[in-house]
Image (cartoon, rainbow, N blue to C red; front, side, top):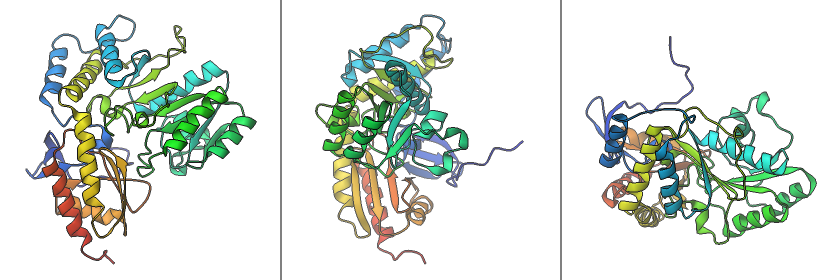
Length: 381
């Protein structure tokens, strides 16, 4: 049997990792500025993370949600404290797509409606409902097509209100910062305007913070940079478990829980919650949100002065870099010659950076020097 070939692979086989570094099967060292799609939030094999997992393994690794799991409550309390959402409720699952799917379901339950609004450039996951709200024809199968889902132009409040007036809408879903879409940061007016429209038309505002959350931008959630925005539902995953699969939604206290409306076999298991606790403890103890903000600002300032870079945008350590050429060959050279991992985005000229939140300036500066050297040469014919 062979693997179903759906992934374009970086030609490297890492066998060991620590912090923002990886070593391959030839012993070569690499700098990880992509973190496996923003998953590695506190660095590879962080000692506290490893200890938390090992200690939990020595006790109990898994049981389903048919029993009381004390560490779930501990995790919820810590998450509320650090995020500032102490009065919200937590539902745990396994991935960002599941988080968005369950957030959509809760919005639909509460409003009795089935329609949703999302925005061009969005990526909300690969499950059925999430795909239907994702602006990527390549991943939309016939079974994902929904007439009551509306994908609108980014930043268009007027079109949003028109849809709200004329259709039965349960919710509006938007990423705190679009990731796959190329690190598109919503303007304060746009995000605040959506929150006001949601209130006016009595629909639920869902903030997809799967990639942009967990301290990556310098705030716990990216939407917290905009005053007056308090979503009804917040979806999370990626950086929650530093590589261990875990996802979740924060649910406004206005929502009433009842047995059976949501459920999961693996979500919130002992090991997942141990991983989640470790991440929150390290973010807090090592001031990683502050580091993300400071390192991100410094990196973006340095990149803006480089010839061949036409735009730099983002917040904290969620950064998009638009080049004057195709980014693919540049990313390949960064791997091959300079041993640096970076990410792609929907735009062919965009490099996406999502490094661990505890990365230091010496590591980031090595990227600045490397990309500057590559861009000083004319694009390959």
